Amino acid sequence: MIVEDEEVNYLYLEALFENEIEGNYKLLHAKNGKEAVDICLENDNIDIVLMDIKMPIMNGHEATKLIKEKFPDLPIVVQTAYSTDEDRQLAFSFGCDDFITKPIDEERLRILLKKYLKIN
Image 1 (tube, one colour):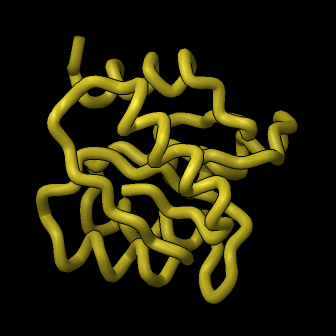
Image 2: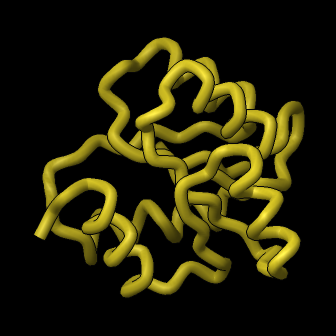
């Protein structure tokens, strides 16, 4: 699932998956943290979450915390333009598993997907 309120950022990630990343998957899109939590509660077959932080209604930190309470083994990778050490530590304190900075680097994304989805 991609949690991203900026349509351009979502479309970029969608294009990476469709054109560059091999595999059999179905992308889900949440436009804010509340939608992300709701989608996770309705779908127990989500394998990974790419979570934006700065979003309306509910931010990515709070959404990560709520999702991890229910699904502690679901990998959540924070994707954000804010990449200071404090930003990283804050994201990890809310339960994220990893961190990727925007703009998203295709190779770094591929490495993270391989790590958490156990794909080649």
